Length: 95
Image (cartoon, rainbow, N blue to C red):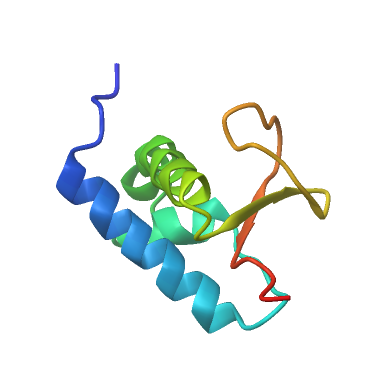
């Protein structure tokens, strides 16, 4: 069973999520897989990054709770804790 992410890990993943979202540009989104690959070392080695996905979702949930990011499913905002399937992460619309 996977262990709970540590506070330091969550903070590092939060920073990486915000960095990747900002780099993607306004109106663009990123995949949680992208963050896990960036944090997990070699992006071509699935065993390296795949276990990080749960921690990435926990970090994204924390950022969503604070209003720092939006979580999208099929282009519409959703609560990450109840979202099923493919989700995307983006910075909130400044408008």
